[in-house]
Image 1 (cartoon, rainbow, N blue to C red):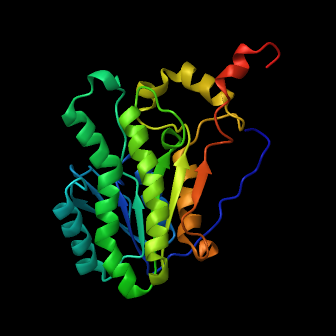
Image 2 (cartoon, rainbow, N blue to C red):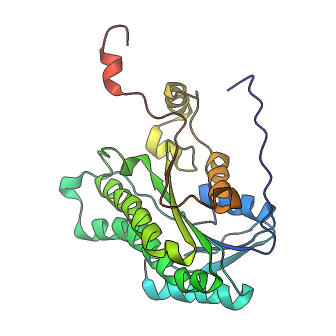
Length: 259
């Protein structure tokens, strides 16, 4: 939006270690870069090593949908850095698929990536955070998990499960100083935005329909992660933080005269 000056808040995460799943590209990479810029040592994972990474970011090859690989990944981070303070469960996503024709293999893959994988990662970091008497887990959820998600039904169900998982873990692990929160991400501009929203003109139209006049960007998500992981949010756990630009306009208003 023009005419509004927004100043980025500075955080100091020197001496802290963060894990960002899916942090090699897209929104996850922006989150990893922002954490690293604040002095955090960041570990990212993926199935394929990226061509380059920002300073302060280390890559580990891992498929978080596999419990053993998730644990090996976390153990490797502990071996190298000695601790883990922040886990950002960012890896996720799903192509559009009509649910009536979705195969068992497709359903299993989407559930594992968006729900089971984050659970495996949380299980893997928990003993270390408990021993440290503190840690922050941030689950990147979606508006698809908080409202109907036609065309991505399995994805929406998985993200809804992730929101419930967030609150359950916050209650189970709070006594150990482990905070668990979720970000309900709204309509975001990503490298795959064209597949979801259409061409640039269509994306611009979607942005204009948002109360704040644009779609979300990686920096919007990263800023929320930074706050939730900081001492400013020391008494915030089990929260569902909506980062959605004010939310989507109800469709029926466009059908009502004068809406």
